[in-house]
Image (cartoon, rainbow, N blue to C red; front, side, top):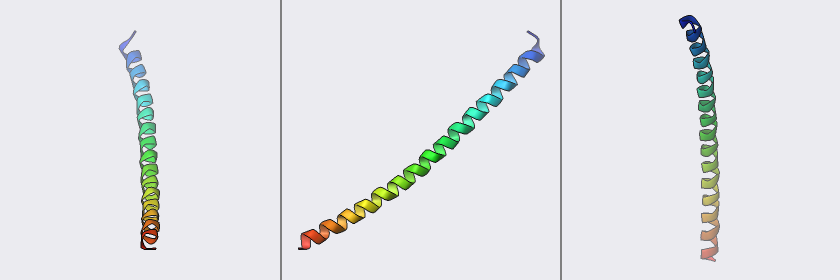
Length: 59
């Protein structure tokens, strides 16, 4: 195999690895966004439950 041919193959592989890396990074960002939203929902539910419990305890 000639050196030039090998270099072309390596460049193609490198570009494919870059695409995979970009997709993983995008997926990671989406997961992080989901976690932030999910944590906000949990915090909201916790506040709601605390208020409900405090009302029931005062009755």
